Image 1 (tube, helix red, strand yellow):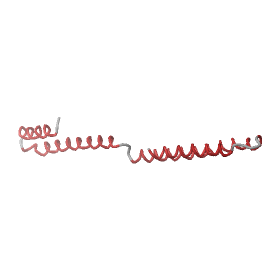
Image 2: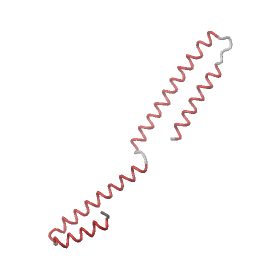
Image 3: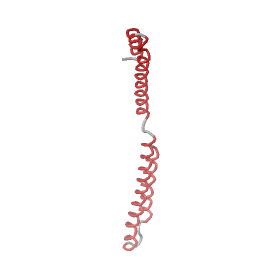
Image 4: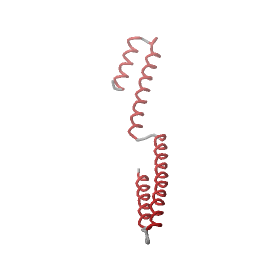
Length: 114
């Protein structure tokens, strides 16, 4: 039922019930309008996107992912270069570390766009 229909029904109920029930009719109408306003606000908030709490949670998750990637990158880099230093005369350190840096940069740039 639309707002106009609700108002017409409230006025008709007031006429039928008389002035003794006017307060109850008005209170009922205002309660229905309050519920309708709450529903519309909730719809707009849902359409606007995640709440502040959800954004904070997503930011913490992204920070955790960046930290995990940095730790894994350093571990993989150390694990890859240490055996090469012992086994190969001219190990490709630069290529390994440039690859690690590029992976971290790409990940961090991509996560900041969101």
